[in-house]
Image 1: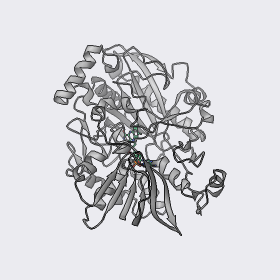
Image 2: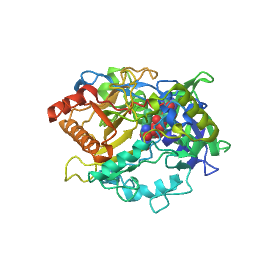
Image 3: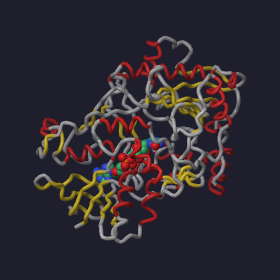
Image 4: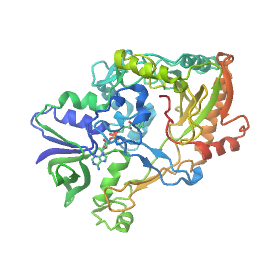
Length: 469
Ligand SMILES: Cc1cc2nc3c(=O)[nH]c(=O)nc-3n(C[C@H](O)[C@H](O)[C@H](O)COP(=O)(O)OP(=O)(O)OC[C@H]3O[C@@H](n4cnc5c(N)ncnc54)[C@H](O)[C@@H]3O)c2cc1C
């Protein structure tokens, strides 16, 4: 019997395991479906695309999206110690203060920005920003890029030139403006939640970590969660019990999936799958909102894209990183960007833009471009479209049915069109004059709101098409 059982050793699970076991009298079982993080690739900031669709990734796809011409959108999710923090893009962006205040105003006491800021500070060990918004002694290391592509500076200069204010810290007093991102890295190597919170406490005697163990349901007695059931190649079927609490940290899709598999969720959906209803809770799996990304892609007249560098250069970059933690691979290739408003009276910037100093494929499965170029990804940070996830069957090993319902709300396509117009203004600035080639996406022919919106329906997805490496 444990005091706490934590399901999922991702970002949330690692933090909880760390903090709960600070009390030596409290015993914790942490259960993870994936294995240990042994891949050298997960350390390298510029290598994250190579972790996608591997055994480190649940590799989800959405249901066909009716507003995206039936396309199914790739949803990577970490399946390894550290969870998604082991495979993510390392961008250190906390979110807008109004995100948290919005949660508080919905009745979630303790989630306002003033409440969470001290926790962000406690979490962080920022290697370059030292002020009242940042911490310097926390488990998660945060740093500037060791080496920046020259295009990143040109982008920031161009954005400033067209009147976007310079922002030295997107996680500071204000989020608006243009500038450089930071990465969750220590000495140019990834710092995942497992690195920060789990590795230092692996020897705590009150913590047991079980890997390669797939939790199949929460065991419920009366109205109390008393334990979980899991299957693993090593242990077969196990049913550990928790005296105090079961903490579901299995991520945005797998936590609701587990609730439903355990009989907690919308009664009709559970009955359809033949699951006994323990609690009819219609909100489980509902209100799914996910950011969509549109891409502005241009060729350039200078040779700066690592993605198309000759093989020898790429091999030398790998050696640089391995020996000195330097070179192009010490960057996640997502160095500069801006936070922008769609409408002048917006209370927060709904758009997050990220420059990539190479040409992304025109669509996710598209061929890798062989030219030098740039891509500006415009993320819709606060989409208005609302979708849902559910389970398709009672088999816990089946993938959840994910339907973000992208672009259902017309605002979203309009906001993304506004993002493309921002990009065109930035790219028209003097800073870019001598080096910009041709706009490939959305292409000069797309000018009206309708044409730009149609491009989103055809091409937008939710990933950053990482292909720098
Ligand atoms: C490709 C990608 C890029 C991203 N880029 C960024 C970025 O640049 N910056 C940023 O701030 N955020 C980024 N994110 C988002 C960020 O990483 C996540 O929001 C965060 O890690 C989620 O934490 P979590 O604890 O909710 O879930 P996760 O970290 O996903 O952890 C869930 C854990 O639960 C385990 N699990 C699930 N189901 C079961 C089960 N049934 N039994 C046992 N274990 C189970 C999983 O294997 C996983 O380890 C990115 C995410 C992805 C996937």
